[in-house]
Length: 328
Length: 308
Image 1 (tube, chains in turn orange, blue):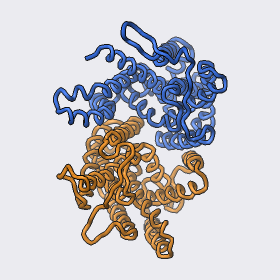
Image 2 (tube, rainbow over the protein chains, first blue to last red):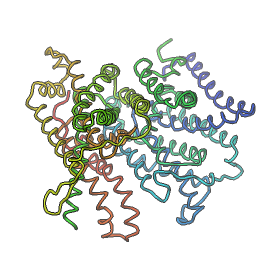
Image 3 (cartoon, rainbow over the protein chains, first blue to last red):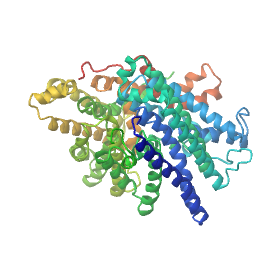
Image 4 (tube, rainbow over the protein chains, first blue to last red):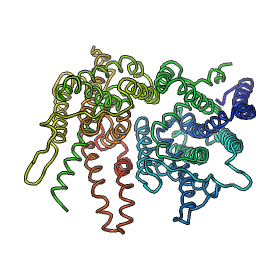
């Protein structure tokens, strides 16, 4: 990534720019053309893309295969749903509010806290242990929300009112999309800064060869934990957006198969690339929509594609267009 | 506290424990020997349940159905190994989880296509459907007792297989040094296929045993597989002994937690607080246990000795 020639760097910049511009402009054009449905699809895509981008930091750049990342989407969504619920039906005056800033604060704070605690435990382990442990912690929160009868338990909770911000009304579909899109751009920019910083270099170095980084005097555990917390916080943010968009939250958002889909998005688009997760999220949402319109058994072709992709196309689709280091 | 009820909850915990062991044993075997992570292990559990359900209606006898379904479950495992899993051994764990995640979607949809979306309740023969009085005042469903007994018998059989047979010797040798085993002229590909279908048969048996209690349904394996993961993480990945002890421990703790946690909480908090917090905590209990075990021993309670 960092030994690219000027030529390769410029080309990658153009690929990333094209991807970003298309995802922003096409849905709005379709909306103006009267195809309002596609704007909803795009909003969902952008929310999932933020989650996938955050997963990419630990999975693609850090080499940590977290199979419980959807848990942060859930925490973020419930951080919108629970205060809104109490603002409508009383009790828990401390958090009862429609204030969007409070919702986002809660989403990010609780996601970071959960990432810090579970990350500190699970990052002590490696490989398969790490996969299973992140999965189990995700399932723990799943059952936690299932057991909360007040907030609908298994059935989930309808959010009666979206987060309120001064001058920005999320009830308007275009505003909702633009807010999500702008936040996604900011997250991508932050990711660009993080990945190319000293911190990002250490993280990627620890992925390539942990022994070497430790021998150089880096405490790789601390760097990984920091990355894990950043990823959790950003994913919590995406959950708050997704909760606002769907206005319905349920433990099903946290199910480990959701985490599997996020991994799918990252790897399909290309792990360890800036725009890869966005491409992956776009393909996922479109595939889901197209395949499910053909057949109720759409998981079958989807599953087969996933298996074939693992067997035959390992580096992600975006890699077909991006230059690798050392190629020229 | 009522000792009769306590004993019955103990048996319920044992029943969950042996089922978890049947699942965890297969996972642990495939991981210990092939270094392969199989998320779709729960799908083999589901396949066992559905095959058994169909055969029960076809043959009219649950026991006959189980006997026929066990080799079929092993066959499903063999086919899965041959078509997909075999090509992944040389890959990393990330590829394993992704491809087997794809397998889950394929299995779930295939079951949906073949058996429909509704769950299937499997009828028991009359003599298994009743209850037995174990001793004065302790009455327990016959079939649940049968699950515990058959689970323990299978565990004993596995212990014998792994420790006292030639196949078991190869399995142990494969777990400690794969390259050496194949260098000694053992057909490692055949051994892998055999172990994978053994694991599939064990998972299938667990599915068959649970199907009369909680019916065969799509996705039934996707929840319990995580619990099985917790079992092998606590027990030590690749250790059969660890899987057995941890499975029973998890079965008992989960069952007792769900039945007695509110009583315990009431000792030191208000009844209302106890009744709202107990379900949430008991749902998370085994994961908290896992976190505690990992914080103290990241390699699990009984890590296998040699790995290379």
